[in-house]
Length: 244
Image (cartoon, rainbow, N blue to C red; front, side, top):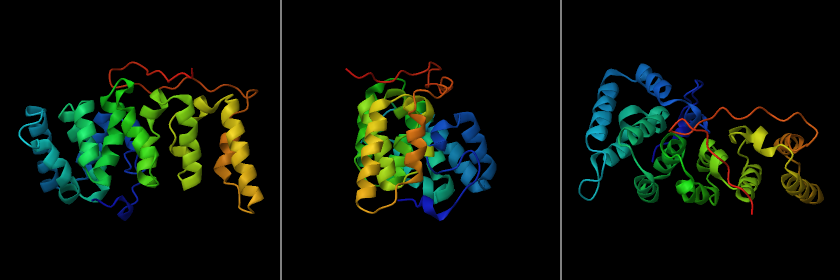
């Protein structure tokens, strides 16, 4: 398993949070290529060519899946997430392939799959992967799970609980993609936040600053945020799940 805690990148293609999911793939590729050494860049080019040439499964495991496992060792842990996303894209990984990698992979590979979802899946069919990550207490998986894909497709009930899970575990709510728009005028989210704040106060525990930030966003009298500029892999803006 790669260890993303080892490096603190500061560029737009950071390996932390949901930034990778929000970075266009061309920019991601350029960023990584500019920072890899010659040997690592050659390895990446070959891995992408292999994935593009043999995108499906061949035998027990495809060549590109093996490259996913090698990414941290070959390119360094600070670039491993981005490299894995690029390989998944080159392999044209569909939901079935992403599910297989997620189920069989390390925590680092699972994180890369979550980052890759908005780049590869246009519909809600990969939501079970997001929902699985949201059931964990792994803050790196949680940060990756609340990216643009969840913002587009996670139903309101599950999205609200994802926001609460971030508060429970200390994941900054800044990682939650499209937070301003989805939280706006959400009375149920406001109620849940109020209950959580009351529980914390009754237990003599501090209320997270992030809770107050989200609670402010739920105010129906505030100016509604502009529509999200995020787009799915096919260029069409996704739709959020609706409550029944």
